[in-house]
Image (cartoon, rainbow, N blue to C red; front, side, top):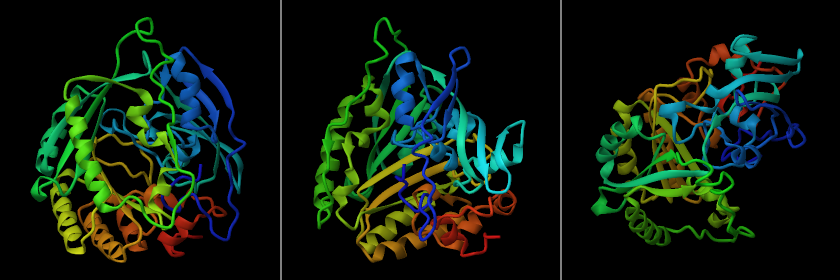
Length: 402
């Protein structure tokens, strides 16, 4: 859909292949929940058709406007990695159009190596034309949720150890500069509602887009004073929901989808998201480094999301998710100090044995990419020689090209 925050979906000065017309549903087996569709079908379209019929995707990202091909190529993750891993765990078959061999089918039992190179392979192993996905049954379009306020990162780590056995979905929102500098957050927990469709129709639980931002202004509207007021109001509103409450599907999974073109609030210069994952034993060090360097640079993120990944691997050679803690921070892209600070964070991440998320990246240096991808040499055996991208050329600086 062209919505990646970085340049994995761009090909400057080259030919860009769009999947716009690859948007057909091909086959569905209601007994097994297996769906065959083309790569341009979006998560939004899958949910529109199958959620009313009692089916959902096992892994959902923060927006429904992602194509199946993009979800596979980036091996996207959701709020339930500790339970269901990443998107690639639920892909049964992929059909690729390769420049050297035409259409190729691959799966865990057929062309297995190419299959795992394609999951998280950033679209570089061939053009994905179709895929077979495993859907999961749900009873309705609602989730039973709980919000737990916490103070400081150590308390988040404690909370993240406990609820995974009882809650399908976990994620935390964090406000760095509240509580006299210690920070505070809200830990969100959710399970699919178990009420039957006779008690709660499947068609319910689908929120509608409410606001549309018409254009990007000359100035950034997401400024620090505004965000501090918003964070304070948001925190107070969420702590009122500590008891279990019911939330509709879209509100829980895709809150920003309700604001069309929300990124335009950042003005013409836009914003940058930095997302990385590190092993849990290094998470506290990275957190303290981020806090220290943000204070020194006088920078403050407009949004911070923290999640715990489980030890569930899709097998994708270049896949981002790994066991540990992932941080995602949004910054307005105007500050000159920002890039130097993020360079410091990048080096800390790879030193701790972590990696950056290519789907969100727009500035990673080649040495960071190479150090964080131990399977890169194996991946190069399956890369299509005639396919490239702006991201690939940037992070390999020609070293990854044949």
